[in-house]
Image (tube, rainbow, N blue to C red; front, side, top):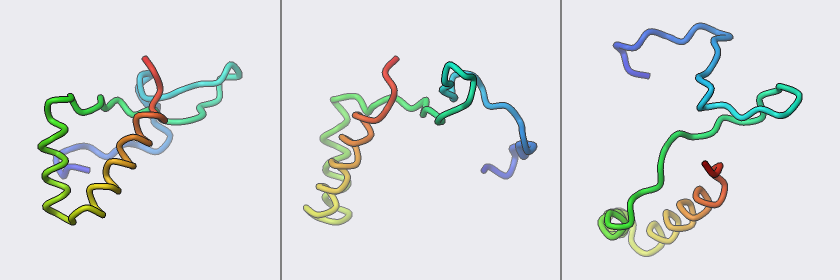
Amino acid sequence: RAPDRAPTPPGAALPPALTRRRSSGAVTAIAYAARPTPWWRLPARAWHYWRLGGTRRLGAEVRNYLRWLRQRPRA
């Protein structure tokens, strides 16, 4: 957390956009509010990860990104 942010008190409610609830009212998961990377930025990201760790790192990042796309909730 950022040093200038006030700490979140224990038991504080999350904003409704960040929670997913069952019909019983129980919170099942926290949904990320992040959006996918726009298509025109993907080549620059690929180049970045390839420079960091070569083909192996790029492959791992591609797999992670695709897994994230499949698991994120649809709007």
